[in-house]
Image (tube, rainbow, N blue to C red):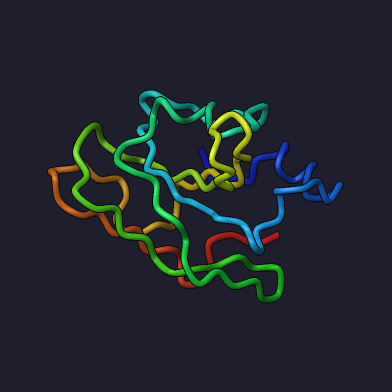
Length: 134
């Protein structure tokens, strides 16, 4: 699977639906075991991927939006144990997994993936050109 933006999020973004813009929202990154979760263009909310999450999702700090490219600080996941991680899912955290929009599925261009957790920290370093482009 190549990196992808979730179509349901893009639809909501185009309609300027509340809580779907990245600015002013808490965007989180979640480590995902692809043996449990398979990307689907039909998925809309974090609850669709939640069962495959390894460790605790982390906020993407210092988000930037330049020339259609979304970027932010690399993310460190602390004390991660569990299944092998092959992808990262970005989502907007509304506080409720059933209403938190999925934004991006990333399994290419992230330094540090795939990785087998050993109880230590996992650093995900985004692609130098940004996390994703519109």
